[in-house]
Length: 173
Image (cartoon, rainbow, N blue to C red; front, side, top):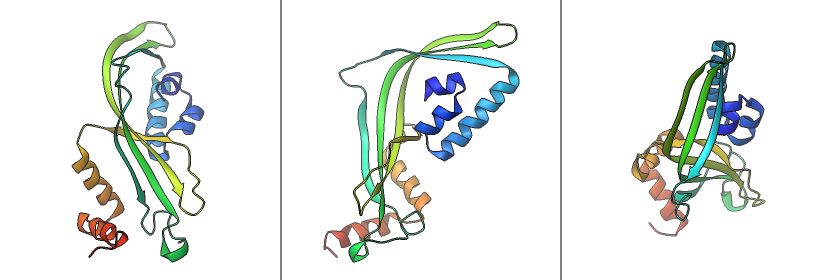
């Protein structure tokens, strides 16, 4: 994603990111083109290669009604599920920026970055086919509790409703 972003390659971005993130990145690319700024991104090195990348969070959840699951399978099971993973990446990266007209360097910065990349794909519960992993965004270290709260807010459910559904699936009251 970073290489495509630096190169201004919207077609490649479309292959690896989800539409809401793509819209934001496309706006960034457009603004950068208007200013006449070119960029080059480089992965300098991974830190702690024996520990990174590291999966911090992984879940598969049924998509509620209205979120692509209006078609149900046998026994009323939702047709689609969403698989989400948060992966920690620890690396040094370099970003160089320059004025495309004059060639004047506007910035050349190397920094160590620890990023939590949120990946997502759709699972067809009927056929067991899975979509390609795509970048959904970046998690800011907010923690699992806040991530679950945000998911529930987006899906329009409360934590109690989620717990109730889980218990029903497990045959508990």
